Image (cartoon, rainbow, N blue to C red; front, side, top):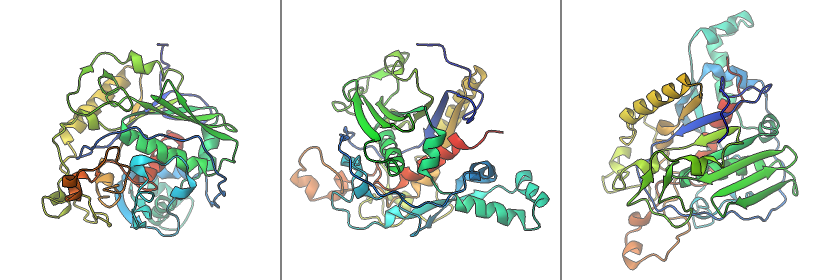
Length: 384
């Protein structure tokens, strides 16, 4: 593997830095993981009209991106329509598999505001209350696919991990492909089906997904023939996978879903319901500010932070984006029973839909779109 360049910042539009981003997401339920085939067919997409101020990334330093609340937004969301993205399949195509409601697509994450010296600096340029100004900035941020593609021009971004990370990758592809004309985008399968590549040809941008659920070598490395039980890993062996990442500019790793015990279940009692309930038939988010999902392992978070600090001491700048808590409010946005089933359901399962409800993945459009909005903010805003 080639020698890595020292990383001094997550992103600077004037220079090229290799970046690693950890999307820290703790999932309390495990579900069957299966390969989602991504087709090559395209369709003409009408470009959305977007009003956007590209300088907003600089001002977002005053926003606490990961502390906030979900706000219903019927005007700006969803960011795309599921029927307009030909890459949504299987576990994520809830509308295609019978989900009739679409309210879960219309929630926007509204960050809180940092009340600090950064906010107070606004007094130098306006007589208005600086808190109100920053509040408007935090509330008005919107994803702009054209701006993202322009800033990523000539770059390769790779999402690496399991089916939850693939969920996020499909979301990102759907978010950016809406502004790319027919004939200037393509999807490719490389190295069998372990590596999937979406290319925006006009911008020379590659958005890839690489299947490596445990990152190191394991008996779960086959994209379709694997299971979460009886895992075997070669803990010190990452070269097999990493050789596919060496020319990447940004690496995005996701949760430690596959490292958790397979018996862990997401209990409805955490959402204020009866203990035997899960995400089945849920149509509204958790709205209690004090809600804390018990699967959010603070000890594991501290270990992760310690490990990242050790990497930084060696010159490797790994940024963690903690989306765990904000995500756990969204009990309404899982596929539940509205997904592709890769084997016929038994009579026992059919008699108890809760037993096969998928409370791990996310419908698209939906929650992963918000993850990507935060990810893009981290990538594109200027580092001080």
